[in-house]
Length: 277
Picture 1 (spheres, one colour):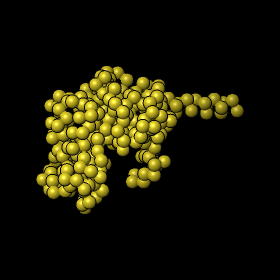
Picture 2 (cartoon, helix red, strand yellow):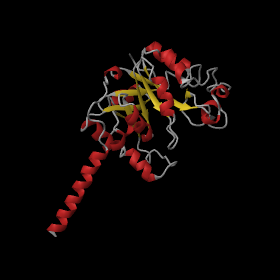
Picture 3 (cartoon, rainbow, N blue to C red):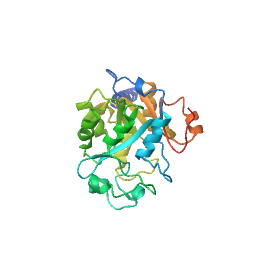
Picture 4 (spheres, one colour):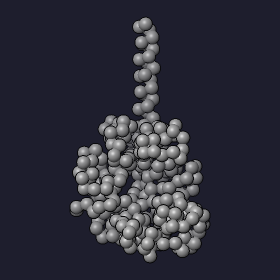
């Protein structure tokens, strides 16, 4: 009986060690986080989807810069491989049009408006020129499946940008590309309790691995951007408190939520309200 108990204890100890190794973020030669601290980040710009400054629009980014907020934005490729700033893979919700962003060239995308505004889908390059280093950026790569071509294409533009920026993605392959090619750039793993949130697009096993950040041993993120409502989730908690990994909260939607999560995260992405300075 004692032998069986000892075997079980050893087995559980091995599993625990493997788990801790798998979720370990980058521990050595971490990029400087100071340019990103002390700033609140406007989710897709300081936007109002019912007005003339909808999400991921030049107007929303201009408003964020004027208020001194950092900016979180989304990047994906058009059909002709132009990095554009747009969140959804499909156009339906934002533009009321059929098809995916990747089905249209950049020029064709200019035929659509964002919600009810006169704003158009901007190029990443144009957004960078607008911001011009005035506030830090969190650039989220939208990566469908294993298609990481957005990383080298967008990075070729970001490489000449003189302002502070970091990258993040839900897809670990984007972080892996940056680990292999641009180790100097701060990279973040986006995550959530996907099954609890009702996600069904991929297999439960994949969602379990993504939720628990079991790909960290490959991607070695510098920060974890997590659904603030799930702040007690074990892997997120260990990354912050055991490994001292930068913790980013998404998406804070009220002053009360911001105040309630102050002790649990380091950086905050917000929308639906304007925080006090």
